[in-house]
Length: 421
Image (cartoon, rainbow, N blue to C red):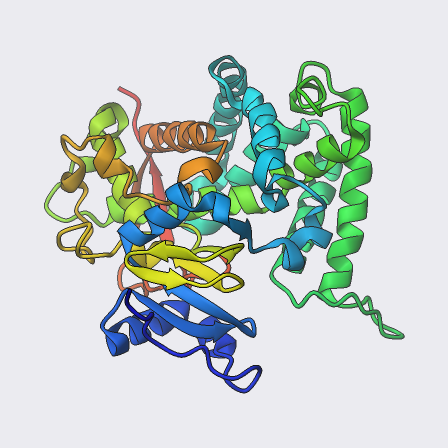
């Protein structure tokens, strides 16, 4: 049995959290190279933490060892989100998942598609698309409207002021997720970012309560009809989760990466024409975007018992931080892992796609993965049917990974309307 490379260091003084948050990709690459291993141990959030950048090891953790771990978010995020499936383990998590999956079955997805089509068509007809726009901001506004319309029945067309209020509240709520969890309010100030987020949560829950009563055959009503849906805390907290900025930011991240890669493809001038109708081509680009640019860096777990992973023993009480970004660039899983090669997915099978961890894996995989995929495909098809997109030359396309993967700077593009045939 091998010893995990690295050192957990001393409490507080040996903590590497600052170095990690300063540049997480640089941090992980540095220690993987230093220890010549895609698993290493360091002290993070003042806890011995095993960082995993091996694709096969992440699969072991998520698919085979999930019952041996607790989710590692509860102490940081439960107050912001309330008790929900993110913070539930064991049989309780299985039961909640089974209930929520009813909201994302084939029949439900068909009913959601009408809303997605309507919003995307409306947004793409707005005249500001004909100017040079920041791709990420365009996608964020579009995906925010899709998610809030779907999950909370927000009417952006006829109740514009209320829609703006809800968007602002979800933004404030999101800032609390990525801030220091201290709810303080000093005299003559509006309070800490975290305190503002808690207030935004209270306001959002009031709106959710009203929407649950008013909505007819919409998501706020449907969630009350599934098992546990009659429990106020269950429906409220999961609607809060689904309507938070977390989902549209993930969608915006993937769509931004897709548009940038397609728009800068060299030597294939008609790629933007073909991507509208060639589903296999679009999917190969989407899979490669997921691989190279996952919206979130990874995830965290706490070991409830000793677990063997890739020949290493991870002790009970240690944390695990699996790094999706690094696992997707593992040379043992992918040839030329740093290159954008959508053709690698031509004729791919389920085993190949299982190496992608963008939506998690195993029993805790994303329950809304198919809906996310449908939204992304709808936006892409309609976007490239309506516009030819050209990036402004000489831009910095480098990325940042926290809190969500996106370009470090605004990447501008010109959206030129296509002439109808």
